[in-house]
Length: 250
Length: 387
Image (tube, rainbow over all chains, first blue to last red; front, side, top):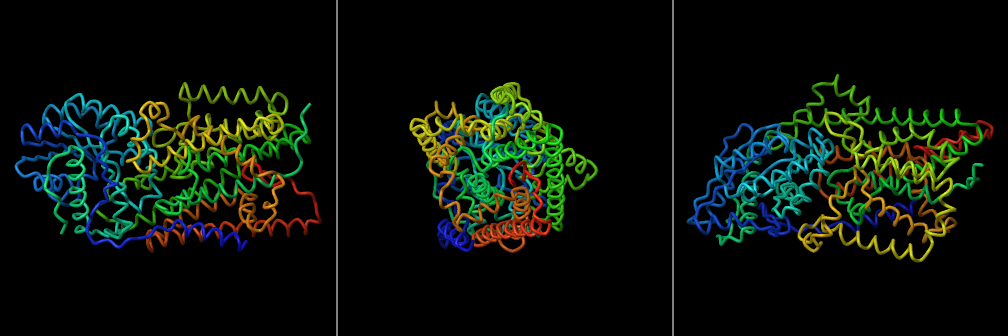
């Protein structure tokens, strides 16, 4: 039995990753922001009109409860893009409604497109579907239909998946939904903002303590600021915009 | 005339089931770096397939003998008794789960995760949640295997009766149910919505196939499984899966998969036991049979003893593993979630599983001696195991 344990330990130690020391900034490795899927409508809008209209559609995790909209990632995205795209008028509008599944959002997309005419829709979804255990297959169909409706309506799409929430990880099964984000992103060739992977990266590298249970507004603001910056990078890279390099976070 | 069943216990089954139990445990700990060693990262199928197949195999092995010696009624009663034990074990784990989420959520005010806290809705209506759990409709994360088992066992007596008389008909019937469930979309309902994560009408195929192999297939399939052509196909398919799966974890490589292939393959569905997953399991089984013979000397060595011990007590060790995964996650939440803790939790968890299995074996031996060597009633551990 001891031999077995020694063997197990040896195997486990081999998988131990080398932890590199990182500065205390919310930098995101390039592999987590792959710019493989293009955003042609964003590129066209910026080069032709020098204007970029973005709409964020999402649920409760697109806001910080008890905080003004200015601290949440959609506003931080607007700030980051404005900074990086001088001479381009960037507007980010938001439609967030708590407790909405992906399927419930799809019928509203058309109206948002007509009202706001965004070049890009950032679609944050999945968490509520996972919390309620809604059928992952129906979730995939809703995602697929939503992306199609947005493309037909003349907007590019960036899909945003769940947050990394270590405390609730053993209570909410998100795996199937994450897979479906990937299938749809692949099939429709739309970029995916891997909020889950990015936040897990920050947690693993000690950038943010996401295990904390207390009401820490300062951390929440910084996380959203960093999410906004990372999202700006994904959009700039995917649309191949000529932009200023990102400034370091405070 | 019912065919003779091999009377010797096949230690390889315990070995693979023991290893599957460890892998399931590692996969159940969320954000666990150690789970990179598990097979789901290197192929389409995972430990669940191994587990269900071996359980079908051992269930047929144990209850098949009971049915031949004592008749349909006695054997059916034993199967249903086993299903009841598993039901009780499942409800026990459910209570532990509810205790964990109640505790973890106490005083949780992190504004980032207000949305995720909607999971606590279940605590606010215990009348509904408890009832739905007793009906096996509300199943928390990672608690899908035992309910699948219960349903498979309830349907097992008539199937076994058929397998002993008309094995081919029984197997064809199983394939037919699989195909119909897949085409028509039959599944059991879940609460608050949706369906079972592991569709029993699809997963029964693997269970029945295991049972069929135990009673007939080993002789019938032996030659085919050992042929060089089968081996080549299996290796080729496993290599193919090994090349595909990393592209899921590193999206950058996703574009190396040709579009026509992606359209053909995706999505690879676990709920309905996608045929690619089934094939992947078969390929693994062919390889295992080929390179690990029944009388493999290492099967008697102390290195493999811990895994075999765990495999011999699979119901207890499976439940313990689910509990340990909860406890491990709890420790990560309360102490630290860093990598060293993930490794520590994984090692300690497996060590506890081995120690518990060893204790169970010891107790069984002591009990056997004190009852004057009375022949023990074969007890199909998690539907098959202890003979």
